[in-house]
Image (cartoon, rainbow, N blue to C red):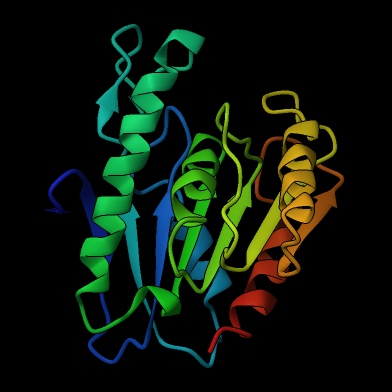
Length: 205
């Protein structure tokens, strides 16, 4: 496993890669969790991708699972610090041959919240936030990258209203390059959503 200043990560490289997809897993998962998702959405793509999956840096002391930050309201300050660290790591990748504008940032659940908070402040090619939510006080900046929100109507872990709140904030900020895809499912990335993401990444320059 490789590392930036703040994060360990798994890298599936391609010497001819022109684009990059960076994965942020959910609470309780690990860096390998979203690799099958990435492989599926870039399958048969005309673009050549490098895949990077970051590992959440913190461990929950109660169950020894990975987390970006603790889930209790008292730990939102920790979330802010982790967002700042994530931005630093993302900028480190920008120094490589593939710029951020050719990078897709995909997060699931807690990873989606991290993607929204950190990613909307950077010049990314696309942000994909699956079954996510926004951190307290988050507001989108004036100029944001393309954002794709996906959420299951039957999600009992993170209710769909959380993605709808993000979408509403983006629209209030006059973000024209965002969309929300709702599907008949639970707290998951449905196969129908994989197809949608595949279509959207093909539109990146």
